[in-house]
Amino acid sequence: MPAGEIRYLSQPAQPTELSASSEDDEAWVWEQIKAEARCDAESEPALASYLYSTILSHSSLERSLSFHLANKLCSSTLLSTLLYDLFLNAFSDVALRSAAVADLRAARERDPACISFSHCLLNYKGFLACQRPSKHEDVPGESMDHTSFMSEWSDYII
Image (cartoon, rainbow, N blue to C red; front, side, top):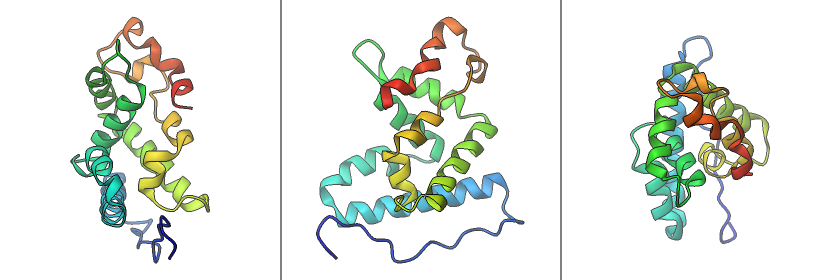
């Protein structure tokens, strides 16, 4: 295998469609993401710190995704910690988490260029742009004045 090429030998076994609940599916996808990140960190030591801080140090998909989005969008006046809390609060909604898992699965299963769930999570700008709450009501306890930036934030990712 040429240097820098990452190849996953086989598609991981997927949970059965009939018996998998959305929580089981989320847990399965999260386990796949962590396994892929561990494999990538071992095969590419230069990325190990990035993979650890973005994926491996987090206990759940919503925490990892919130961390990643917050760091993509932060600025000197809009701190990543504030954004992290805002995204984590939004991802407390089961429907939003299920939608994120469905988006990850769709990209992985339908896009031949997508080599792994972790690759999609970290690098697919289209996936990241779809993860914003669709309206300010999706962020519990926040007023439109404080969250209006979210309506067009995908422009900053892309």
